[in-house]
Image (cartoon, rainbow, N blue to C red):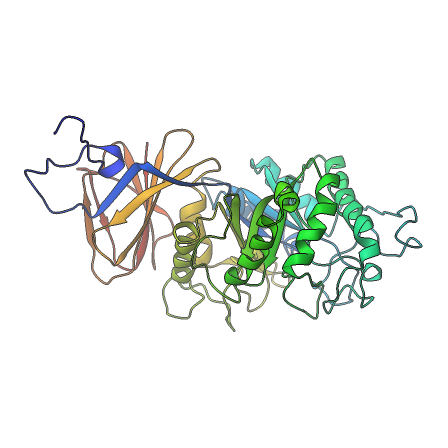
Length: 443
C-alpha cells in the first residue's frame, strides 16, 4: 500500500493495491463518507384504526403488536405517529375525537379541554409501543377544530383564522400534556397535515408563508417538543414549505424536522435544509388487499422496498413513516385487520419495511455504498453499537455474488418465499438472489 494513500473498500478495509487491479467488488462501502443520521422507521394508526385491533382476541392483538414493534418477531418499528383529533364526522373509522370539540366562547376565552385517557385507543397502542422500547411519538394535527377556521368546519380545507392562532398553539401543547399525564412523552409535534390538499375529511390549508408565520407562534409555546413541519402532499411540493421556513430566521429556529409525503410526487432529492427530514406518510394506490412480494401491481412488497431505498439514498431522510400499520378491507396497510373474522393478515409490505427497520436503529448513520452491478440498489449504515448493516435490493433477474464480507455476518432474505429468513455468511460470501431484498448484518 502506498504510504499516506489508503483507498477504502468494503466496510473500511484497505483496497487492492492499484498496481494489481482486480474486478471491483459487487458492493463497496466507504465509512469515511457519512450521510444522514437515522431517527427511525414507523407507522400511524390514526383515524380509529386501533379499534380494529381492539376487536381482535388478546392473543391476536399481541401477535400484531409483535409484528409492528418486536425486533425478533417483527419490524422493530421505532416511531409511532399519532393523530391529534378533529371533531367527529359520524363515519366509522374516519374521525378522531377532539380535546376541545366546542368553542369555549372565543379565542381569548379560557379553554375547555376534555380528555378521556383513551384518544381513540391511541393511548393504549402508544403505551404498548413504549413497552417494546419505542421512544419517538410524533403527534400530528390534520385540522384545527372547525370553529377556529374560516369555513367553520374541521373538514374540507379552510384556513386557520388569525385571531385563533395562539389558541390553536395552546390546544396542540395541551394535547402533549395530556399524553404526558399518561406517561407518554410526545417528542415530535406537527400542526398541519397536507396543507396543500383539500380533503373531504379533516384538513386545513396553509401556504408555505402562512406555515412559516404560524411556526413563530407555536415554537415559543411548544419549547419542550421538537416542532415538525409541514407534511406536504408530495415530496417536491414539500420543498416550498421547507424553503419558506429556512428563509425566515425565526421560523428556522423552531422547526427541528422537515417532513413530506409522497402521494403527489416521489422522493427525488433532499429537502433544502440541513435539519433532519422525514418521509412521514405514504402508501401506494391499489384496489385489492395484496400480500404479494413481486407481482408488478405497484403495491407489492418489492415496491415498498424500492420506495424506502430511494427515500434513504436520494432524499437523505432520517425517518420513514408508513401509512398505515393496519386497516381493513382492500387496504394497502402493512396488515389487514378483520374485526368480523377476528383475524389478521400480513402483507409482504411489512417485511419490506422490516428489512430496514429491524436492523437500522435510531442513531445509526448512513455511509457511502455503491454497487458494481446497476441492478443492485444498495445502502449501508453503521449503528451506534458498532454493528454494520448493508441492505441490497437485487432488481435484476440473475443472482449477484458479493465476496469479501468481513466480520461475523448474517444475511436476512425477503422474497416470494422468505420473510427475513436468516442464514450465516460463510466463506465471507453472500449470494444476492434475483428480485430479492437481502439485509446483511455485520457484528
